[in-house]
Image (cartoon, rainbow, N blue to C red; front, side, top):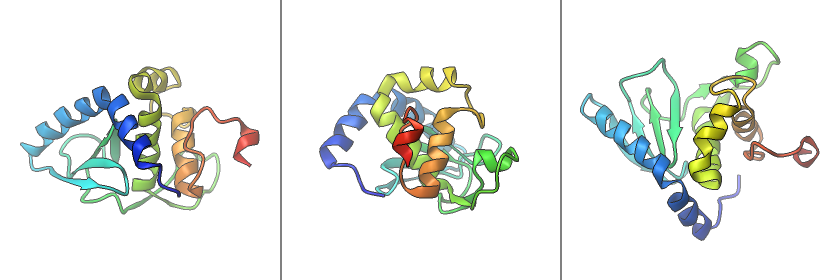
Length: 151
């Protein structure tokens, strides 16, 4: 997993700042209920751990990750594995969420509408499939890659 160039990270953070603001507001609300915040250079995000709401797991908004657990170094299953479509190896939750951070930084304000148009939180959503692929292989976070380019 090669790190993006620092200039691209800065431009991506600026481009997705409206999404990051949503995450910061939700994260700040979580701080009032016991969440803890730290900067993760690995994930290119501000991580709000022990976020008090939601069914478990994590959700990303721009360069913020809201996580109900203590840290992102936890194993989880891919969407396809959970749906019974295949048997994948366990992935690191932080790697999956980092893929979403990269997607947000590339698409900026377009991310949320495109994500919802692609089916929201679902095994069929190309954004989730790409994030799982990235977490499994370290490559392929772009949700609109052709199957041929992933070989």
